[in-house]
Length: 132
Image (tube, rainbow, N blue to C red; front, side, top):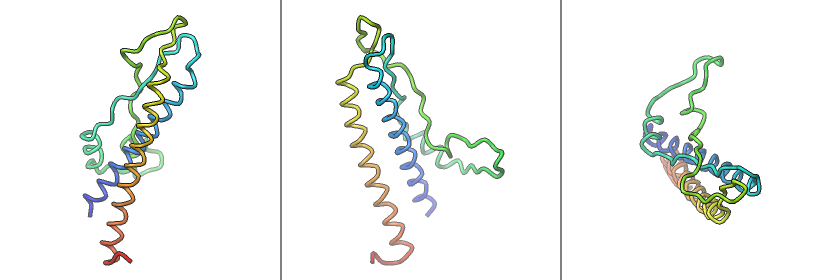
């Protein structure tokens, strides 16, 4: 059962990552006309890193402890995009590329939510002993 919970942890981390990515994309689009703004992106989600975090077994035993990133959701590093054309005013936001990324991120989010619901459904069946 703990391996199933580990999978749910990884799915939760992926959802958190996608949510953070959507925020960065929205910020880029909001700054399309800001002179000197450099387009940002997140480092890609690493399944291997997520597996390590899910298996760490860390816990906060006192409310004064600092909550590790592995327990607070994925906090991917934001970096400036590479290989992006810069306009005359120094802005590097590629509106078309950002809109495509938003669409892809939304589809990825819906897929992960569907897998998460399926996994929780299977856990419910395992606990109850039947699908009804």
